[in-house]
Length: 573
Image 1 (cartoon, rainbow, N blue to C red):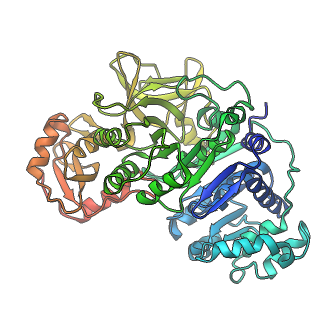
Image 2 (image 1 turned 180 degrees about the horizontal axis):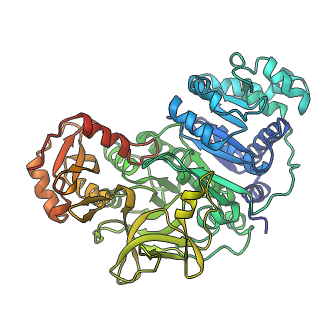
Image 3 (image 1 turned 30 degrees about the vertical axis):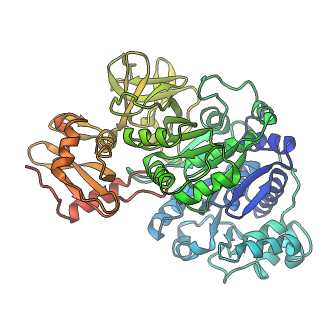
């Protein structure tokens, strides 16, 4: 079977060529249009020497071009490298040095950062800097390029056009470094629209870099087949049954086109693989250039969205608040799906109340494990200190000796079966992440969990953010969820700070709701009704805004820096 992302996508193109494939902002492309543009980009990249196993950096916010780049890399058997578009020079320099790209596709507004960090990518090919024009008149320029791009470049597709791309009006600035700068649309105009690529393999490598919330980002390498079976729709998440073959997703799409809105940026694995899985099934994928709660609900109305994919509280809470502020038509919405970050009990309850006709789900997993379990969110569900889910296939909880634990016991979450190859250029971390249990290989990224009496699993939190206070383990996510039950708390982060007596003590950074006065004594009363006394923060900082990554993940590095440089509103007693 051709269990490769490019082949899975092309099956859908052949089945639904005129169906809407993707919409972003005011632009939309059918499957055949998206296919042609992805083919053109792939041929351009191949013409400058990009080949199987190479890496292509993608430094961009959400755009149709970003989705085209993901597909084009798969068609070439290359790997797209997701680079956070909020990274500055230092962070970009790290990513370029670590990921070894031979080409870099980036938005024009990010040109200063690219110029400053370019020497960290010595392997860039000539013609390998592709600039997406994201200026205000971009749509008008792009539409014009479709009509006259071939004339503007050289009048021909292929190799002879590429030199003209750099010499003509396609270059939005002077050549910068050994690779030069190439206008993205001119590069497409120079590439062939045909689908004449070499056969691909299920063993081709797909790479997703982690967000780096607890350290430097790491490139997690997956075989295409393995990531398809865990995240790309190659398994039914509810029944846990694998799909029978490569054609099943596109076959299911013949029953009608679902519309899927991915609220997170494509630099995050949650949105990246969710969008690709939607395309494999013939769905229409909706993206937004940036997260804005009201714009998302407008897009739900406009496109009649059926499935809304989000990342935890950071997206759910403003979305629910926006629904309270204005009356949007959400009757098309069938599913509201959260994963990859804290979805606190209070926000889940608010979501159930606001979306009574939608199925609300919470999934757990990580870049290293893929999908590890899912639960239906219901009103009044018991809070066990974290999300409690039905585990996926080959999911265990293991102790420090890599042995499975039983009901009522805690340990590290482990997923077997389809697991990643490891971390790019880091065999030591790979060896720690991939362990053998009962003769099988399991991915164990460090998430702690508990096996419940009924066989379900409660995710407690990442081990390296756990607070060890006087010998007791406190997982930040549980305390953050408890803090958010207070009516005046909008957001919160919990960390451990040094304590001479306890080693570490629990500390909280709290963002009040707009206009709210937060009474810390009242907050403590609320917490004592939710969690054990040793988990209650001994020091509290009131902040104007909690810093989070662009995908909504906790920014623990910021939290530690803030507590070191600012006095708390409440000191330990």
